[in-house]
Structures are given as C-alpha cells and as structure tokens.
Length: 152
Image 1 (cartoon, helix red, strand yellow):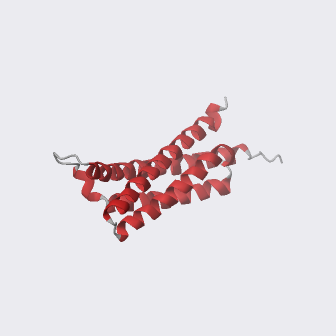
Image 2 (cartoon, one colour):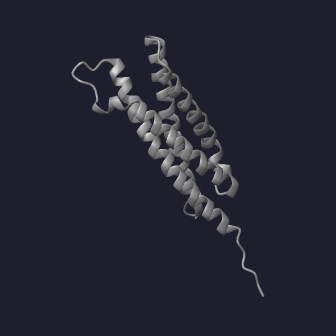
Image 3 (cartoon, one colour):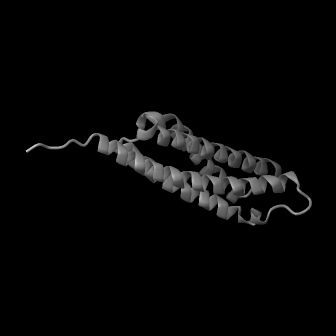
C-alpha cells in the first residue's frame, strides 16, 4: 500500500535525481578535462559552474527526497529548482550544440567527450522535467492526506 500512496513516486524521483547527478558529474569531468587539456574558454567555465550547481542540488535532493517529499514548502522549492536547473541544462546543451552531429570517422576522445556532454545535458533536462512533475504530484498527495472534513 505504501508504494502506491507515494513510495513509488519517491523512489522514481530519487532515481531521476541520481540520473541527473551522474549526468552533471560527467559534464563537470569532461569539461574539466577540456579546460586542463586545451586551456578552456569562458564558455567551459560557465558549463562547469552550471553543472556543479546541478550536481550539488541533485545530490542533496537525492538524499532528502525520502524524508521531505510531499511537504508543500519543500515541494514548491523542488519544483522551482528543477525548472531553473532544467534551464541550466538546456543552456549547457545549447553551448555544446555542435556535438549534435556526432563524431566523424576519427572518433577521438575529445569528440566523444564533447558528444557525451551534449547527450548528458539532454538526459538531465528530461530528468529535471519529470522530477518537477513528480514533485507537483507529491505535493498534491501530501496535502490531500492532511485535509480533513469539517462537520457542521
């Protein structure tokens, strides 16, 4: 019964935060390698900043989803952060948009990492989008549990 009343949604939300955390860490690692190898541009520093914030939030949200999901204040905060970080991941995908065509015949590590950052940004966009929707449903299920009928 617990899995139906919100446990499955919390478990799915925790899994999606884990996916977005892994995607953010791949983006941070690959972009850090670009900076170390090729003396990166300000674009690379912006990507690392946005992905680091997304990784930090995803890690904290992954830990607290089990305890705080469904409480109205935290659900609204989660929806807000999910939307902002979804926009940040869209910005990372736009900054890496040249990778959408994939690697040619050479298949060098640089090209593969560049394509991986683009793909991870797109995966994280959908993970944050689904998490925002799940937070909304958790908020609705949490507030309906505390609603009581008033007798006249």
